[in-house]
Image (cartoon, rainbow, N blue to C red):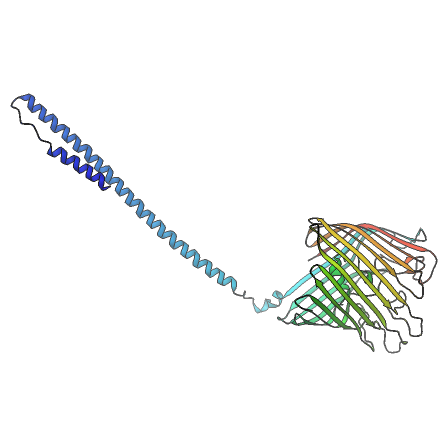
Length: 452
């Protein structure tokens, strides 16, 4: 900009210092001088216009710089205000929400529910002929509906109440209290539950099997065990979750039949998880809650359980493989009582092999096969075989839908299992330890669960 002023000044100086010719006496010379003066004035006017334009540019640049400085200052101020607001919001979010005293109970209470249902067709036969039982044919059934309430009192104490609506043959839908307990979580290694709560074995196996809504596990399906009972339950995790245990001192008759007894039954489990592998052993000892005043002497019912399973990926596909085994002694045939001390002893064995794979997202394929010998001593010929296979779709986390085929067979006897819609399976329409022939139970349909 200064160089432009210097050029303009030099031009003015050159114009003013240009030597003027001597005045002529003639008119021609006067005219020439006037023309030179006019030209000089014209140059001065043009230079003045250039100077004005340059001054205007300088003024515009100064105004623009002033506006830029003002905008920058305003932007800096706005950013500082936004940062202060963000810090204030973060501090408020990190503070615990203030809940009115009248609503604190609701903030610490959780409602949950789970329903098992199926729409299926059944063909139930004895010695090749349909039995005439009410389960032959098709229909819709709700096998279970659980409604639970959990409440947390503080970091240590909590409580649970879970109701169970289930289908009872000949009765319809019946309502029970499945779980009702007070819990004290003294540490991850020592949790105490008092009341009716999950027992050590069956719920543990169900959590690995993953298809309880399709069928109960083998010791539950054949009624050699139950999933919950009234008593005191102690459980926990050791070695950062590597070892898991539970011990329950219970009534023994199951959650549907709380009762007083002269003796206490015990059920326990110890399990370990190594990477993707699960290993567990468990056991039961007692009189199943039947050692009451005036009863005849009973043998002690005993059961041993074992499980090995793998839950991981094979060829990048989620896979579950497992095998469960049980051996029991002294359970009276087709009842929930131990054998009388005066009667001959008996034992039973059963195992289950299960597998599932998820070839696509939201889809899985599963299969299972059970073999049970319900009476090794009194009727060693009695056999029970159960299988299922299916494909499942999970459109959302709250629902599973599976197309399933089930087949169950029994021969040389007839007894009740939980997989039946009603009645017994085998060579008779009523429970009998020994009879000639066999029975079959085939079912095909849509099974599912809904949970929240």
